[in-house]
Image 1: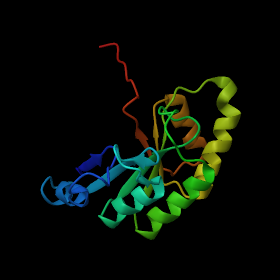
Image 2: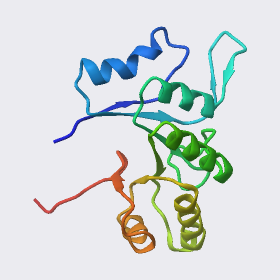
Image 3: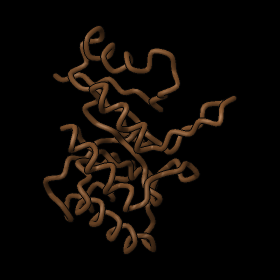
Length: 165
């Protein structure tokens, strides 16, 4: 069984940020490390701004195996500075340049009137090079399977699973 180290909100201002990924791989024996990006980052108390792409590149240079991001649509963190389609393409190109993967969170509940826009969004994301999706909605999981049967799908932490037991 493979193990993943997930670094939520990779902070390039954090002292020792360059060691976070190496620590996860070497000390925690993670088989791969996934880094979350939710937008541009501003260090409190400074005027410094690091764009989401620069943050992703810092994580990739430090050895991240994948980066996951949210899109402007269908992301649970709707108010974050998420990625529009041109930014998704740039992020996919950057990840692939480093031999890493780009995962896209599509982790909201989706209602019937939203499906035409959702289908367009998913098809564009796949065409732009997104390697996998993180989903909450089981209907969305089935829709992705219909659009692209081979694309990997992961359960988002927002997914709720119920049993009768």
